[in-house]
Length: 71
Image (cartoon, rainbow, N blue to C red; front, side, top):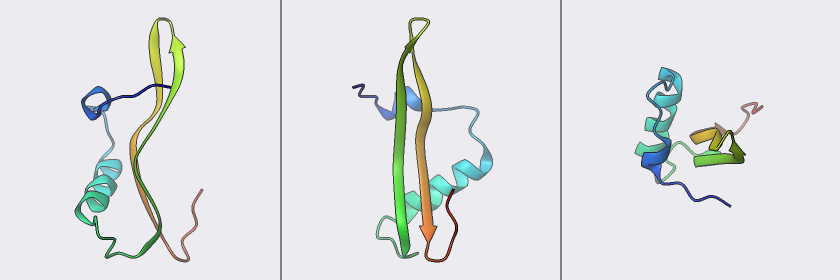
């Protein structure tokens, strides 16, 4: 496996909606929004490509409420 620190994964090209969702999740650590599914800082790294690790998912945060469709 690979262990990465947050500074390794910072993306300067993060979309505004992604940054907004991250701020919502971070500011609601007690889950006041009552999400039935919460993903905080999910990372997926696939092996090595051309001598570098390939990071497919970088610290994704998601909150899904009851009745919302996820997919």
